[in-house]
Amino acid sequence: MNMKICLMPGDGIGPEIVTQTVKVLEKVAAKFGHAIETTQALIGGAAIDAVGNPLPDTTVAACKAADAVLLGAVGGPKWDTIDPAIRPEKGLLGIRKALGLFANLRPAALFPELAAASYLRPDIVRQGLDIMVVRELTGGAYFGEPRGETVVNGERAAFNTMIYSESEVERIVRVACEIARKRGKRLCSVDKANVLDVSRLWRGVAIRTAAEYPDVELSHMYVDNAAMQLIRDPSQFDVIVTENLFGDILSDEASIITGSIGMLPSASMGSGGPALFEPIHGSAPDIAGKDVANPLATILSVAMMLRFSFGLEAEAAAIDAAVKGVLARGYRTGDIYVGEGTKVGCTEMGRLVADAI
Image (tube, rainbow, N blue to C red):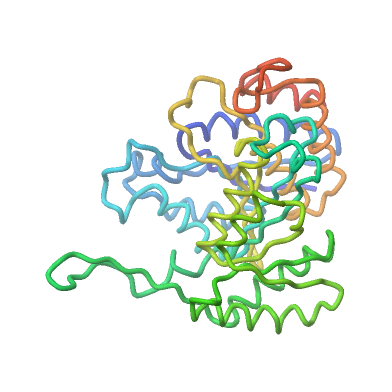
């Protein structure tokens, strides 16, 4: 197979973790007889510095021409004070919309080797943690119109619109049901239907859509309770589906209880065209260039790429096994080091995983 992949290293630690991930991808491709063709494109702060735009047209074109897209990270304090209309994060939101990426898949699984790094009590950890959060990515308050500032009673006020159509809810629930079918066949739809009109629509469409999947058990939970239950008993969840804002918060919460946000990958997918794969952590500018970043979330994102974009299960499993093997041998980057094992940097961790393929 010839795989055309667009690389968007981005800002902060992005270039470091993407570099190590490409080494692992090349090793897998060589082992299984595939060819990889990569291009690089600017996004975020790097694009602002180069051309004054967080998402140049050339980047959109390069992504659309690829089979899949790998993103490092965007943003940093360097660009915090610029015009909000061209902040680095606008590049990320823009490429999701340009590629029609409406479904964000964020697995939150605790590696047994990292149990000591979890923030949860040992008795909760022993019950297991393996959740897939399916987050709607192109609707809700992040994209709803109207939005902006106005004046109310003589003072500044700001507003955003949370809006969803039936078709938007149906397509994300359908994705979640298909994923649940391949896992534990349990789907929890998270909303705020006791308060929000948009959530009442969400719940109604979720019930109607999930009825087409009789083998999937559908339940519902208010978002505030879901946030609590993720800490109290995460083992009760299999697949969670929710809207954009709630999904952003809950998926970050689910990730951090696994021990480190630096361990978790994600995939953003649409109905056609290339999907985008990225670690869920940020650009971590405070450690950029110091060779201490954890590349494992990005490496695991490539495993998701091989699995979801190319249907290469054996190749994806080889990466998963290599990461697990390196962890089992006690190697840790600083974010997952708890006083035991061998602390290594970004480059060394990448080399260890590539060698384990």
